[in-house]
Image 1 (cartoon, rainbow, N blue to C red):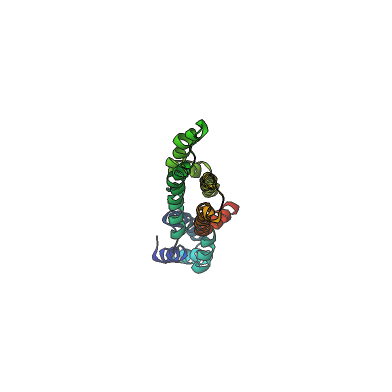
Image 2 (image 1 turned 90 degrees about the vertical axis):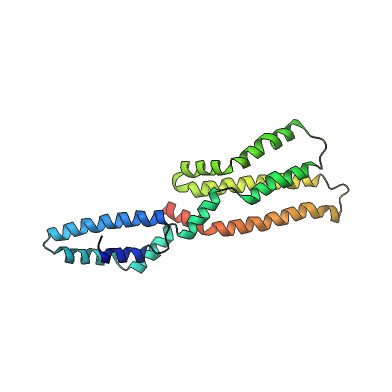
Length: 211
């Protein structure tokens, strides 16, 4: 790879994730090599053919702006890794708030025991594994699939916690309402924060899918 092409690629792929940068460099290098081969067959020197091929690529800054619309950046890659990992706030609701709320209900049914001892801990415990599976199986829409899964799990645990906390409202009073309302308020803040963090990745994934 010549210094001229290397400089163009460095400018055009600035800030992109390493995986995206590698793919773009490979594709453009192959395209330029084919263009050089064609131009030299037309009688140009290799230096002239390379200059024309790189000129045909256009401005590197314009190319970078186009890449940034559909390619993951370093920040997007960090968001993706966090998305595929374990959600600390989901675990907070699943393993701390829900067991605490169950203390308010002395009438434990078989359904309660199954949910607490098997279903919910299993889903939350294997959350990263499930997310990786969804991401790999869903191909281009993998990010959206993982985000939907995260929202479903978080919403289910939040609603379940709030429902159990409502059992503690005996008698119903403003003071008794403070715990479930506080839970919902914290959940709202965490949900809005999570959605704001995921928004750039979501928009980028939608553009990649449509491209």
